[in-house]
Image (cartoon, rainbow, N blue to C red; front, side, top):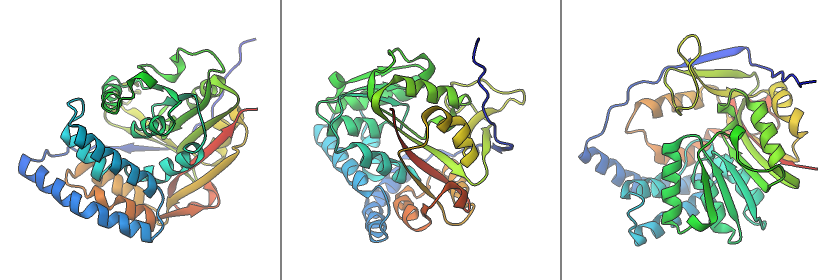
Length: 324
Protein backbone atom coordinates (compact mmCIF):
# COMPACT_ATOMS: atom_id res chain seq x y z
CA UNK A 1 0.00 0.00 0.00
CA UNK A 2 1.33 3.45 -0.90
CA UNK A 3 2.21 5.58 2.12
CA UNK A 4 0.15 8.74 2.53
CA UNK A 5 2.29 11.69 3.66
CA UNK A 6 0.40 14.05 5.96
CA UNK A 7 2.24 17.19 7.02
CA UNK A 8 1.14 19.65 9.65
CA UNK A 9 0.66 23.16 8.27
CA UNK A 10 0.79 26.36 10.31
CA UNK A 11 -2.45 28.31 10.61
CA UNK A 12 -0.75 31.73 10.46
CA UNK A 13 -0.05 33.12 7.01
CA UNK A 14 1.89 36.36 6.50
CA UNK A 15 2.60 38.27 3.30
CA UNK A 16 5.92 40.03 2.78
CA UNK A 17 5.77 42.79 0.18
CA UNK A 18 9.29 43.40 -1.11
CA UNK A 19 9.93 47.14 -1.55
CA UNK A 20 11.88 48.47 -4.48
CA UNK A 21 15.47 49.13 -3.45
CA UNK A 22 17.20 52.10 -5.03
CA UNK A 23 20.63 51.55 -6.54
CA UNK A 24 23.70 53.28 -5.14
CA UNK A 25 25.99 55.29 -7.37
CA UNK A 26 29.68 54.53 -7.55
CA UNK A 27 30.67 57.31 -5.12
CA UNK A 28 28.12 56.22 -2.51
CA UNK A 29 29.14 52.58 -2.89
CA UNK A 30 32.78 53.52 -2.32
CA UNK A 31 31.90 55.68 0.68
CA UNK A 32 29.81 52.88 2.17
CA UNK A 33 32.62 50.35 1.62
CA UNK A 34 35.15 52.60 3.36
CA UNK A 35 32.78 53.23 6.26
CA UNK A 36 32.12 49.50 6.60
CA UNK A 37 35.84 48.69 6.55
CA UNK A 38 36.37 51.17 9.40
CA UNK A 39 33.35 50.27 11.53
CA UNK A 40 33.19 46.50 11.00
CA UNK A 41 36.09 45.60 13.35
CA UNK A 42 34.77 48.03 15.96
CA UNK A 43 31.36 46.34 16.05
CA UNK A 44 33.03 42.93 16.10
CA UNK A 45 35.03 43.97 19.17
CA UNK A 46 31.85 45.23 20.82
CA UNK A 47 30.15 41.92 20.01
CA UNK A 48 33.14 40.05 21.44
CA UNK A 49 32.80 42.03 24.66
CA UNK A 50 29.13 40.97 24.80
CA UNK A 51 30.07 37.35 24.02
CA UNK A 52 28.13 37.21 20.77
CA UNK A 53 28.11 33.97 18.74
CA UNK A 54 29.95 33.26 15.49
CA UNK A 55 32.87 35.66 15.91
CA UNK A 56 35.58 33.02 15.47
CA UNK A 57 33.99 32.06 12.16
CA UNK A 58 33.72 35.78 11.33
CA UNK A 59 37.46 36.15 11.90
CA UNK A 60 38.24 33.15 9.68
CA UNK A 61 36.11 34.76 6.95
CA UNK A 62 38.15 37.96 7.13
CA UNK A 63 41.39 35.99 6.86
CA UNK A 64 39.97 34.19 3.83
CA UNK A 65 39.03 37.53 2.21
CA UNK A 66 42.56 38.88 2.68
CA UNK A 67 43.96 35.72 1.11
CA UNK A 68 41.74 36.22 -1.93
CA UNK A 69 42.84 39.85 -2.20
CA UNK A 70 46.48 38.76 -2.33
CA UNK A 71 45.74 36.23 -5.05
CA UNK A 72 43.92 38.82 -7.20
CA UNK A 73 41.87 36.12 -8.86
CA UNK A 74 39.50 37.11 -11.66
CA UNK A 75 36.93 34.46 -10.74
CA UNK A 76 35.60 36.53 -7.85
CA UNK A 77 35.15 40.29 -7.96
CA UNK A 78 36.78 42.80 -5.64
CA UNK A 79 33.29 43.79 -4.48
CA UNK A 80 32.55 40.19 -3.46
CA UNK A 81 35.85 39.95 -1.61
CA UNK A 82 35.09 43.20 0.23
CA UNK A 83 31.67 41.86 1.23
CA UNK A 84 33.37 38.73 2.53
CA UNK A 85 35.73 40.94 4.54
CA UNK A 86 33.13 43.34 5.96
CA UNK A 87 29.82 41.44 5.80
CA UNK A 88 30.38 37.67 5.42
CA UNK A 89 27.11 36.70 7.10
CA UNK A 90 24.03 38.40 8.41
CA UNK A 91 21.57 38.24 11.25
CA UNK A 92 21.09 34.82 12.89
CA UNK A 93 23.73 33.27 10.59
CA UNK A 94 26.15 34.19 13.37
CA UNK A 95 24.41 31.69 15.63
CA UNK A 96 23.70 29.12 12.91
CA UNK A 97 27.24 28.97 11.53
CA UNK A 98 28.62 28.82 15.05
CA UNK A 99 26.33 25.92 16.02
CA UNK A 100 27.19 23.79 12.98
CA UNK A 101 30.88 24.76 12.94
CA UNK A 102 31.32 23.68 16.56
CA UNK A 103 29.83 20.30 15.69
CA UNK A 104 32.02 19.62 12.65
CA UNK A 105 35.20 21.68 12.41
CA UNK A 106 37.34 19.49 14.68
CA UNK A 107 36.10 16.10 13.49
CA UNK A 108 37.55 14.18 10.52
CA UNK A 109 35.01 13.84 7.70
CA UNK A 110 35.44 12.25 4.29
CA UNK A 111 32.01 12.25 2.65
CA UNK A 112 29.87 15.35 3.02
CA UNK A 113 26.69 16.70 1.46
CA UNK A 114 25.50 20.27 1.84
CA UNK A 115 21.95 21.15 0.84
CA UNK A 116 21.84 24.78 -0.32
CA UNK A 117 23.40 26.39 2.77
CA UNK A 118 24.95 29.85 2.38
CA UNK A 119 28.02 29.16 0.24
CA UNK A 120 30.60 30.33 2.72
CA UNK A 121 29.97 27.58 5.26
CA UNK A 122 30.52 24.40 3.20
CA UNK A 123 33.59 25.84 1.47
CA UNK A 124 35.14 26.84 4.80
CA UNK A 125 34.48 23.31 6.07
CA UNK A 126 36.23 21.83 3.04
CA UNK A 127 39.22 24.10 3.65
CA UNK A 128 39.33 23.02 7.30
CA UNK A 129 39.17 19.26 6.53
CA UNK A 130 41.89 18.45 4.00
CA UNK A 131 40.67 14.88 3.38
CA UNK A 132 37.08 15.96 2.83
CA UNK A 133 35.22 15.64 -0.46
CA UNK A 134 31.99 17.67 -0.63
CA UNK A 135 28.90 17.50 -2.79
CA UNK A 136 26.92 20.73 -2.87
CA UNK A 137 23.29 20.86 -4.01
CA UNK A 138 21.62 24.11 -5.06
CA UNK A 139 18.55 24.49 -7.32
CA UNK A 140 19.43 28.14 -8.08
CA UNK A 141 21.89 28.08 -11.02
CA UNK A 142 23.01 31.68 -10.47
CA UNK A 143 23.89 31.12 -6.86
CA UNK A 144 25.55 27.81 -7.69
CA UNK A 145 27.76 29.51 -10.28
CA UNK A 146 28.95 32.07 -7.73
CA UNK A 147 29.71 29.26 -5.28
CA UNK A 148 31.61 27.36 -7.97
CA UNK A 149 33.67 30.45 -8.80
CA UNK A 150 34.53 30.96 -5.13
CA UNK A 151 35.60 27.30 -4.83
CA UNK A 152 37.85 27.70 -7.87
CA UNK A 153 39.35 30.86 -6.40
CA UNK A 154 40.23 28.86 -3.27
CA UNK A 155 41.66 25.94 -5.29
CA UNK A 156 38.93 23.63 -3.97
CA UNK A 157 37.50 22.57 -7.32
CA UNK A 158 39.00 19.06 -7.11
CA UNK A 159 37.32 18.43 -3.75
CA UNK A 160 33.87 19.87 -4.52
CA UNK A 161 31.17 18.62 -6.89
CA UNK A 162 28.24 20.91 -7.65
CA UNK A 163 24.72 19.74 -8.47
CA UNK A 164 22.03 22.04 -9.83
CA UNK A 165 18.97 20.19 -8.51
CA UNK A 166 16.49 19.94 -5.69
CA UNK A 167 17.23 17.60 -2.81
CA UNK A 168 14.39 15.39 -4.06
CA UNK A 169 16.43 14.77 -7.25
CA UNK A 170 19.80 14.26 -5.55
CA UNK A 171 21.84 11.77 -7.65
CA UNK A 172 23.20 9.67 -4.77
CA UNK A 173 22.65 6.21 -3.36
CA UNK A 174 21.20 5.80 0.14
CA UNK A 175 23.86 5.82 2.85
CA UNK A 176 26.38 7.84 0.81
CA UNK A 177 27.43 10.46 3.36
CA UNK A 178 28.90 10.74 6.83
CA UNK A 179 27.54 14.26 7.28
CA UNK A 180 24.69 16.25 5.75
CA UNK A 181 24.22 19.95 6.52
CA UNK A 182 21.39 22.30 5.60
CA UNK A 183 21.58 25.76 7.15
CA UNK A 184 18.41 27.85 6.96
CA UNK A 185 17.04 26.00 3.92
CA UNK A 186 14.36 23.52 4.99
CA UNK A 187 11.98 26.35 5.94
CA UNK A 188 11.93 27.45 2.28
CA UNK A 189 10.74 24.02 1.05
CA UNK A 190 6.93 23.60 1.12
CA UNK A 191 7.24 19.79 1.29
CA UNK A 192 9.77 20.00 4.08
CA UNK A 193 9.11 16.56 5.53
CA UNK A 194 9.97 14.86 2.23
CA UNK A 195 13.19 16.87 2.03
CA UNK A 196 14.15 15.74 5.55
CA UNK A 197 13.31 12.15 4.65
CA UNK A 198 15.63 12.32 1.63
CA UNK A 199 18.53 13.79 3.64
CA UNK A 200 18.07 11.13 6.31
CA UNK A 201 18.08 8.40 3.68
CA UNK A 202 21.40 9.65 2.27
CA UNK A 203 23.16 9.39 5.64
CA UNK A 204 25.25 6.38 6.59
CA UNK A 205 24.47 4.63 9.90
CA UNK A 206 26.19 6.68 12.57
CA UNK A 207 26.14 9.71 10.28
CA UNK A 208 25.08 13.17 11.40
CA UNK A 209 22.50 15.59 10.08
CA UNK A 210 22.93 19.26 11.04
CA UNK A 211 19.89 21.50 10.49
CA UNK A 212 18.89 25.03 11.38
CA UNK A 213 15.39 26.46 10.86
CA UNK A 214 13.49 29.57 12.02
CA UNK A 215 11.19 29.03 14.96
CA UNK A 216 8.58 30.73 17.12
CA UNK A 217 6.26 29.86 20.00
CA UNK A 218 3.46 29.68 17.39
CA UNK A 219 4.14 28.38 13.87
CA UNK A 220 3.49 30.45 10.77
CA UNK A 221 4.15 30.61 7.02
CA UNK A 222 5.46 33.65 5.16
CA UNK A 223 4.64 34.34 1.52
CA UNK A 224 6.32 36.85 -0.76
CA UNK A 225 5.22 38.80 -3.82
CA UNK A 226 8.18 37.84 -6.01
CA UNK A 227 9.89 34.63 -7.11
CA UNK A 228 12.86 34.93 -4.76
CA UNK A 229 14.72 31.77 -5.79
CA UNK A 230 13.21 30.98 -9.19
CA UNK A 231 12.20 27.48 -8.03
CA UNK A 232 8.59 27.50 -6.81
CA UNK A 233 5.35 28.12 -8.64
CA UNK A 234 2.96 30.87 -7.44
CA UNK A 235 -0.18 29.96 -5.54
CA UNK A 236 -3.73 30.89 -6.59
CA UNK A 237 -3.14 34.45 -5.32
CA UNK A 238 0.04 34.87 -7.35
CA UNK A 239 2.19 34.68 -4.23
CA UNK A 240 5.26 32.53 -3.59
CA UNK A 241 5.94 30.48 -0.49
CA UNK A 242 8.92 32.07 1.27
CA UNK A 243 9.58 30.45 4.63
CA UNK A 244 8.10 28.66 7.60
CA UNK A 245 8.55 29.35 11.31
CA UNK A 246 8.41 26.13 13.34
CA UNK A 247 6.85 25.75 16.74
CA UNK A 248 7.42 22.69 18.92
CA UNK A 249 4.51 20.76 17.40
CA UNK A 250 5.58 21.45 13.82
CA UNK A 251 9.17 20.43 14.57
CA UNK A 252 7.85 17.16 15.94
CA UNK A 253 5.45 16.51 13.06
CA UNK A 254 7.63 17.51 10.11
CA UNK A 255 11.18 16.77 11.30
CA UNK A 256 11.39 14.59 14.43
CA UNK A 257 8.87 12.13 13.00
CA UNK A 258 11.58 11.24 10.45
CA UNK A 259 14.80 11.67 12.43
CA UNK A 260 13.79 11.13 16.01
CA UNK A 261 14.62 13.68 18.71
CA UNK A 262 17.84 15.67 18.15
CA UNK A 263 21.04 14.49 19.80
CA UNK A 264 21.79 18.15 20.54
CA UNK A 265 19.92 21.40 19.97
CA UNK A 266 20.11 25.10 20.80
CA UNK A 267 17.55 27.92 20.49
CA UNK A 268 18.53 31.54 19.78
CA UNK A 269 16.08 34.38 19.28
CA UNK A 270 15.12 38.02 19.60
CA UNK A 271 14.65 39.33 23.11
CA UNK A 272 11.93 41.80 22.07
CA UNK A 273 9.26 40.80 19.53
CA UNK A 274 9.58 42.58 16.19
CA UNK A 275 13.36 43.01 16.17
CA UNK A 276 13.95 40.47 13.42
CA UNK A 277 11.24 41.68 11.05
CA UNK A 278 12.18 45.35 11.43
CA UNK A 279 15.73 44.48 10.47
CA UNK A 280 14.53 42.29 7.60
CA UNK A 281 12.36 45.08 6.15
CA UNK A 282 15.19 47.58 6.46
CA UNK A 283 17.64 45.32 4.63
CA UNK A 284 15.16 44.78 1.82
CA UNK A 285 14.49 48.49 1.30
CA UNK A 286 17.64 50.37 2.29
CA UNK A 287 20.73 50.01 0.04
CA UNK A 288 22.79 51.67 2.77
CA UNK A 289 21.68 49.35 5.55
CA UNK A 290 24.56 49.30 8.11
CA UNK A 291 25.35 45.61 7.84
CA UNK A 292 28.51 45.98 9.92
CA UNK A 293 26.35 46.38 13.05
CA UNK A 294 24.91 42.88 12.83
CA UNK A 295 27.41 40.94 15.00
CA UNK A 296 26.79 43.42 17.81
CA UNK A 297 23.03 43.28 17.26
CA UNK A 298 23.15 39.49 17.50
CA UNK A 299 25.02 39.80 20.80
CA UNK A 300 22.75 42.39 22.43
CA UNK A 301 19.27 42.08 20.90
CA UNK A 302 19.23 38.27 20.72
CA UNK A 303 19.92 35.55 23.24
CA UNK A 304 19.66 31.86 24.11
CA UNK A 305 16.38 30.31 25.27
CA UNK A 306 15.58 27.00 26.96
CA UNK A 307 13.07 25.98 24.31
CA UNK A 308 11.14 27.18 21.27
CA UNK A 309 8.08 27.60 23.46
CA UNK A 310 9.91 30.18 25.61
CA UNK A 311 10.65 32.52 22.68
CA UNK A 312 8.99 35.94 23.10
CA UNK A 313 9.20 36.49 19.33
CA UNK A 314 10.98 34.63 16.56
CA UNK A 315 14.31 32.85 16.56
CA UNK A 316 16.23 29.95 15.12
CA UNK A 317 16.92 26.43 16.34
CA UNK A 318 20.09 24.48 15.59
CA UNK A 319 19.74 20.70 15.68
CA UNK A 320 22.15 17.78 15.41
CA UNK A 321 20.77 14.31 14.66
CA UNK A 322 22.68 11.04 14.72
CA UNK A 323 21.42 8.16 12.59
CA UNK A 324 21.27 4.84 14.40
